[in-house]
Length: 140
Length: 406
Image (cartoon, rainbow over all chains, first blue to last red):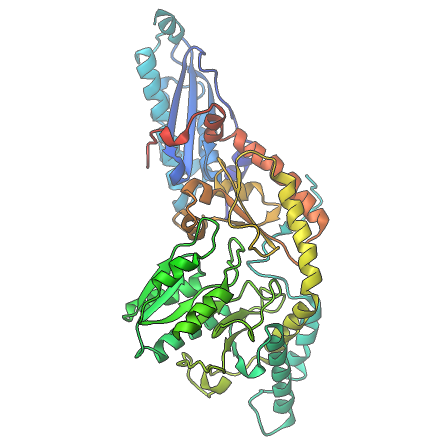
């Protein structure tokens, strides 16, 4: 199995592993995949009141490429607006990590994880860019 | 971890073994000085090669208590399995067209059976019990009046369990069914006595027992006589059952490897059993680990363990300092969990997260201690990264989760 150096780096030094507290303001979660298929990704984003993703966390059950793909997107989404994050494409992830054809599904899953987290954000906080998650939560 | 270690620690002895240096030493003169063709009857080069081949044949026979005349050289256990199953099915096809095997057999048996199905034979593939062993009652029920061949392995390559071939042999002999046993993983690990066992055909490999790759043998019983249709035609070597010039150096290597196995296996197996138990004891207190296959009816070399909530390929990647096998065939294009573990009833997740550790002649206590430390550290790290582990720790039953399958 020949992994690219970038995949090995993310696998050995994964960025932003972990989970946010369930009660934290502005946190949205996307979980995609299935254990039986060999990969499950959980991506969490923490959105500030300006609609900017200020932090992200992941946990992944999957191969080295799946771990690397999810580690990479936690870096990429930070500093982006929710809408910008949703435009990240699997092809960009696959290109950055030099994934072989049999591992393209890992990048697709990572894109799906972002979309799922964004959908969760919109469901929880109404989906209006710039709206404060914290205030919305308090209003609930 | 110890960065000074350049090579991974080899814990994959069921994939292959190194040639024992004592074996390699015996082989070399037969490549350079004594290069004669054992079939050359007209000069001393041939005579000495033939003598070496017959000495080796006697050594292979001695390990399994057979007559040297019952040993046929082949290129390895895969060829032996093909010759035994296709050869017997072909010869006895007028008696019937049904064969019986198990779902946990090696591909060399399963794929040969598939080929026979394409040729019009019918094959029953029996499920093992959850411990990996054959249920004899289920086996008896699967036999038909037109069953001509049964093929059951002695030792499973993935989980190391030992099938009850003595009992299976009695059942087959009483019904006049030819019984083939793939013993590739068994030589030097379990005692084999073909005078007692009612086995008609048995496949052997040299390279699983510290001999060279590319050489194996098939035992073909003489009393009662078992007939085969040859699969390789040519100069009529090996009583016409397997034509092709005999590779003297390979054969000498297999003979020496089997001689050493006969002399050393009792002491060696006890040493290896102690190391295997030390390995298991080193991590068995960890949560959510499952030993695959029965631990009692098992060769001492094998430990197959599933680490729940950790994915197989990342597990192998995390254990790159150990040369081990995964139950997840992830090097192929499709991610296929081990068919052997699936046949035991393990779910896909546990099959994917399994590791096969196989120990051998050159495994040391220091190797095992290093492996234990590494396993604990890496499993811990991967579980910290696993959303499934987090859910398990939060008390969520993963079977109740609606997964978005992809």
